[in-house]
Length: 103
Image (cartoon, rainbow, N blue to C red; front, side, top):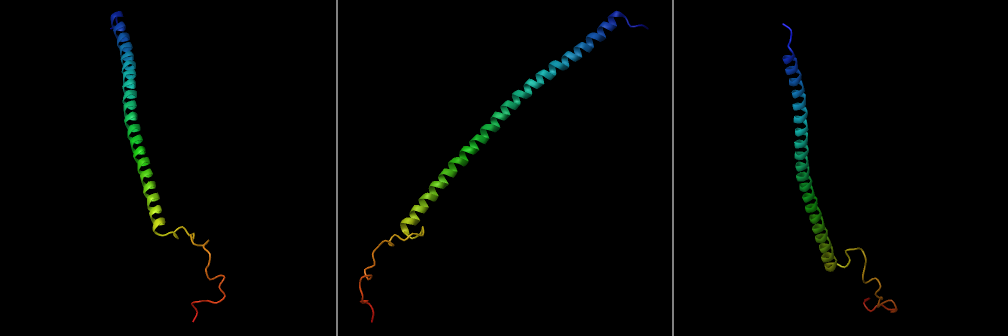
């Protein structure tokens, strides 16, 4: 039985419809995927940005605490940084020929 014109036309339309449907579905899926990726990327970027900001604030707070501790330690012990604040002080016994504390 030979295919009629109607059957050939129906098969051609079916093939064209399948290709067009596939192209439209692919395009729609691609657009939806891009949108979902954009939303997911935004959410991920936002969470990374928030984490970076928290880390920066924590690092600044830690640095301020360390600086305050160093200042407190220096106030408690002036020799902590290795310098002697009394090194420039004159020796009162330098000009004395006799040591008054000798026995």
